[in-house]
Amino acid sequence: MEAGFEVVWANDVWDVACQTYRDNLPNPQMHEGDIRDFERFPTAQLLVGCYPCQGYSQGGRRDPDESINFLYRQFDRVLRIVNPKAFVVENVNGMAYGPNRRLLDNQLCRFRLAGYKVSWQVLNARDFGVPQNRRRVFLVGIRSDIDTRYVFPEPSHGP
Image (cartoon, rainbow, N blue to C red; front, top):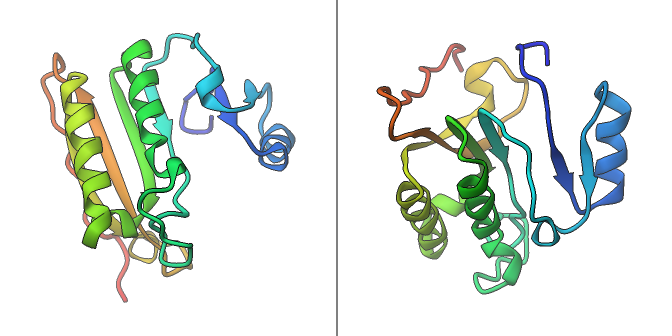
């Protein structure tokens, strides 16, 4: 909002997360429930998402076959319905390594087939002035009919 964006739709399955969102944002358009149960979405220029990471998080159970690992397919579904100019996905960096890499590769393939030029990179929050050592994978897609490609920023802060 401070950056000039208006949130037109938000979703979480966890009631506490939904209430926190409502408590901190003016005019929240929060829709509580399983994303698989929603069929209609408003028009948007930017789609932003993060899906459960327990199956490939360094601190989780790390079950590569757990069904929640595949909720990125729902992001793909919504992406194709909304057809925004761009999208951003953030998740734990464990998705980018070892046997979990197939989950990242599948997302890249799906999002490219949906008509997006996709770039990805693992970034550490500390390199950008956040007081945490927190590595995350970011995927940024620009719709293919837009003549630009996203380039990740260089770190702005030292060790």
